[in-house]
Image (cartoon, rainbow, N blue to C red; front, side):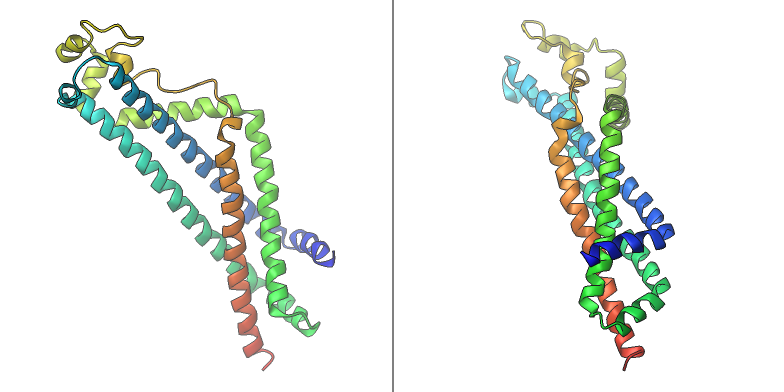
Length: 255
């Protein structure tokens, strides 16, 4: 119970560092969640694209020979892979940022840490307290971000859809951009000449790929992933430097 009281007291006393760290946590949550959702958009688009190809009554060999279809498949697969890599990099960057901010904070808390030592507190216990402070801060900002996004989820998801469409269109080579604007293409016309489908050439390549009616509840797995991964990163990037710095103080001050 006492350690919980000390956590609240410490966060109030070191509120400037807590606010800076909280801002970084907020940016990380927004960026990482947006990246995961955009990756989901592209994965849904890729799956829909491939399923529509399977509905066309033509030999797969004939379909694969069309450069437009090959390029679209490669672009969407590449975007799924790239957004996944961006998410992994965001985790690494977040860990480094937390480590740096926490290290600077430890240097400023030198007198406080020495006082803990004089009071007989062990290095592991003090490091544990500092790590819990930051984990509690992360949970606080995580809850705040989730509540705000739930209140504005419609606008938030529409913005992500526009970002996703913009990124996709920027990846299109000049030939596909031209094809997108002037869809009357001889190869596509030939494909759909005798086809009875719920989509046309333009929809096959570029359109009807995002489920706009989805809500944040459909991405609960991403929210849970950010919860436990974020807590683990914050704890590790806080506990380890605190333990090392307390060990340093033991050798330099109390030897």
